[in-house]
Structure formats: structure tokens, C-alpha cells
Length: 207
Image (cartoon, rainbow, N blue to C red; front, side):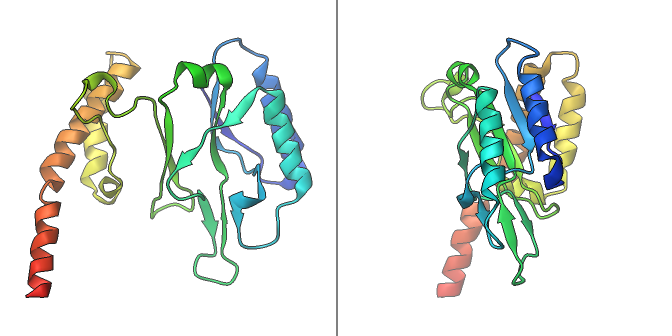
């Protein structure tokens, strides 16, 4: 996995693209690149403002094709960055992406990318889930699902930090699974009454 940040200046985009090309030949391993590329692939990845220069669209597209990469589809809101919200100059773009080689996609066929919109940043957080809901849990059991509402609760960060520290030394995958288990228990205990509260409020308002 490569965590990536592309040059912001348009005059330096070719440097970003050439860096990707250089990295692509460094290893024969399956490859995934995640980050803020500061680049778009299609005009529909932008809302507001002037159209994105076609030369940049083609340049970025050619670069990832040369690297054998392709953009993974994303669930949720189609844009991951915005500027000037609520004004006539409001811009929204899909700058944050997950790019993978065909070999990686075939190996991790159940992987999904979700857009987790946040309040505290102009960028969304992307969540890459590598197992479908049944996954290792078998039929009839619900797999781990990160709930967006947790991001607005200060206790979520404490659960993640504590579980990560407790799981150290057991390997990355085991640590992730342990963290997910702790979040599921914490979130279930804290939010399982939401449905009842909603129904109670509806009955109150109708009454």
C-alpha cells in the first residue's frame, strides 16, 4: 500500500504523475494507492466552478493507465472535498481516491470503498473495507460496519486508541479485528436504543 499526496500546484502535476510511474516499477507485489491525489479523472468528478482542464484529465488518466492502476468505485456522496460551502463559489471535487492494480482487485474481490463525510475537515475520510458482510462470520451473522454517527461522539476516539494499544504485538490484521470488535460492542451499547427513541418521538409528535 502506498499513501499518496499529489502536488497541489497544477504546474507540478507532471511531477506527481511521474512519481507514480516510478513507484509502479519498484515492486512486483500487488499494489494499492490511497490518498489525496489533487487530480480528477472525469468532468463529473467536479461540481461548481469552471470545467477541469482536459489536459489534466488526460495526463492523470494516462499516468494511472501506465501504472496498471484503476480507480475503485466509491459508495456514498460522490465528492470528497469542498470549498466555499454555502456561497456562489462553492466547489466540490473527488480528489481523494483508491487506486488498485487488477491483480489486487482480483485477490481482494470483496473490497468496497465508502465515503465517510466529516464535519471537521474539508476532506472526507475514505473507508476501505476488505470483507463483505458475511465474511468470516458465516451466514446469518452481521459483519462489522463502522457507523458514521460514531464520528460525532468523542468516546469513539478513546475506544480506538485504547483497543489499538491493547492489541499491539498481535499483528496488524488481528489488531484491526480487535478494534472492530470493541467498536461494535461500544456502539451497540450506546446506540441500540435509537430506534426506540425515534418511534417514541414520532408517537409524541403525532399525539
